[in-house]
Image 1: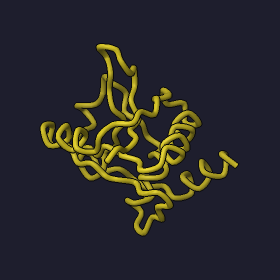
Image 2: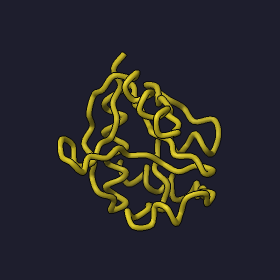
Image 3: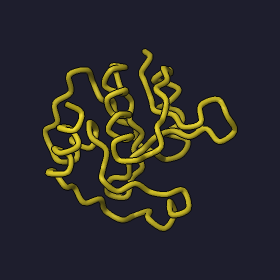
Image 4: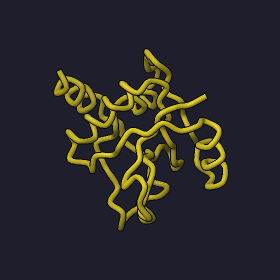
Length: 126
């Protein structure tokens, strides 16, 4: 099965995959639907985050990658409806982005979820 992931600097030596930090865990998002992945990119761009590209890849390749690095991967299914505050992060990025220089410093800090900010970002897309 192929899914869509968000990659930075695709095809270069500095290629990286978009992930979120949740309760001390690194989570790689996998999107079943390309439109959902592109929508998420739009939300990242609205937050002045560097714009990733949406790339199709084998789900097994991403799972192997995550296992190797002790990351988690979450599949965002088509027509996904969040049931918990943590689920909302799968359709709307957190307000706080980590800079490359501070990735290690921020590790282990719990993410605060601001539902009003998430709602505002979604409304900006309309």
